[in-house]
Length: 115
Image (tube, rainbow, N blue to C red; front, side):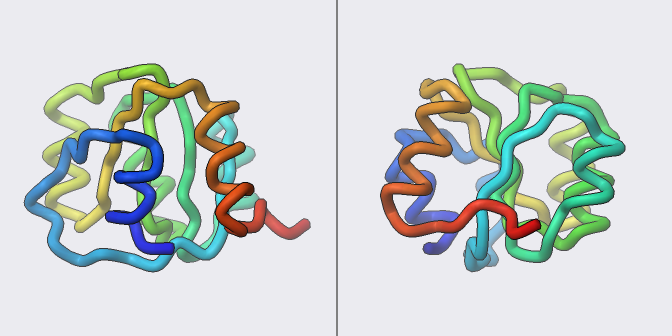
C-alpha cells in the first residue's frame, strides 16, 4: 500500500502536499512514547500518533518511515510541518481514531510491526 492509498482509505488530509514521493507502507504501528518508537520504528512504517512536536518528525526520519498519521483530526504545528517538508516526511491527519486507522490497515493486509 502506498501513502496515497492510505490517505484515501482513512479519509485523511495530507498536511504536507509538497511531498511528492509516494512511499510504500510496509507495516503499521501506533505508539505515543517517542523513546519506544525510536527503538521499534522500521523503514516504510505508517506511524499513528497523537504527538505533534518536532521530535516526531526526527524519529520518523531516523527510522525512514513512510509517513506519520495523526488521528481524530489532530493538526501538527507549522514548525513541525516545515521540518517534515524539509525531510521529505509525509504527514496525514484523519478524522478516524487510532484504533480505526489501525483496523483499516490490518483489514487491507498491512502487517503490524514484527517483534
